[in-house]
Amino acid sequence: MAQRRENKMATIVDAAWDLAHEHGIAGVSLHALAREVGMRQPSLYAYFDSKNALYDAMFADGNRQLIERLDATKLPREPRAAVKKFMRTFIAFGVEDIARSQLLFRRTIPGFEPSAESYAYAEKVLSRAYDVLRAAGVTDEGDLDCFVAMVGGLMEAQTSNDPSGDRWTRHLDRLVDLYLDAAQRSTR
Image 1 (cartoon, helix red, strand yellow):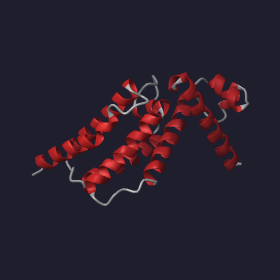
Image 2 (tube, helix red, strand yellow):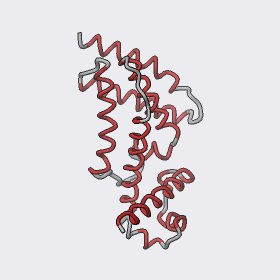
Image 3 (tube, one colour):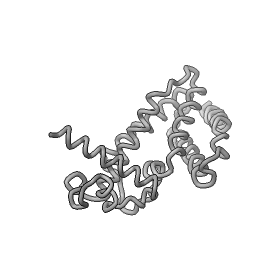
Image 4 (cartoon, one colour):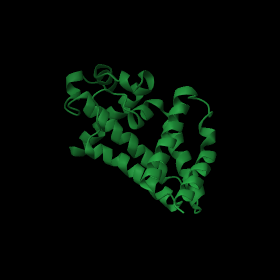
């Protein structure tokens, strides 16, 4: 019975992603979602007690997808090359699906705050990024935070201004080199 419930919840989350792709993340309506999965709207509450609970499940699902993508990425042994490949994978994931990017990397849903359980997946992604950066010599907490902000800004510029192109993302390798060089100089 528990497995059947989990399968139904996964089906609902998948349908919610479909609606998000069609109408934007804020355009997911419980009424349309219920219709999409073949149930009446009140029946959704047996699986998700609120729209924010649905967003929470989507947040966890999106971050699990990102972890799977990162797990499937074979990083080079050379630390700088590993940072570049890790961040290319991360950015590609972020820019390929704007609705998912809005939910995972921006706060576009008023009143939505991921639960600690769902946010743990995002923290796992951040921890992996920090591990790759530390291996490349970026150890200062402020430098790590600034690097994440730089990559987030690059992704934001790309999705906001050139969603189907590479105007900003093509500069990633250059920015990584500039940043790692500066961070390494500051720790000497």
